[in-house]
Length: 190
Image 1 (cartoon, rainbow, N blue to C red):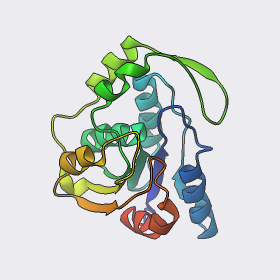
Image 2: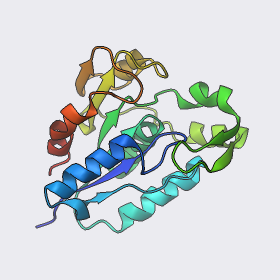
Image 3: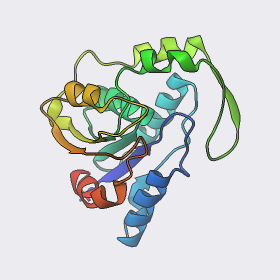
Image 4: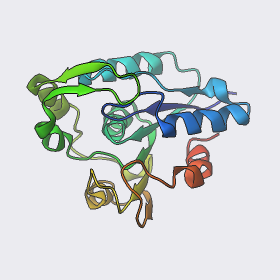
């Protein structure tokens, strides 16, 4: 029997060292399922990030569910639609090219300290990764209304019809993430 697995996609300037990625990995390790979890380092170049995840998908030995946070949620949507996957989205970015247009320039990864350039070419690549429509049955949306970076209502509209867990307050990090680990893991089939 094929055992499901989870691929976690981190957000802009983030990494596998993010709080949510570590908590999810630790929860799965604690349940003896650590080998069913992957969280790749995503390139700041959008098409390279997608290629990295698609290489992981090519090694699939069971059903895969994506868990994406912020920009990782945007990528998870593209990949879910392209590869017929399910995805749990945490405070996902929805209109990424428009939201990131003001961020063209030099940035520093929150965890590694590595500096990188985010360019207009990267914005053009992000336009290519926006599916025309989404199939609601693929998604679990988790959003906090206090997200100071992204307007949660855009995600509620974009993923209308999917299972939605909208929490009052919080912030872009999704402060109540630990409380929702069981629902995410269940949604992922583990």
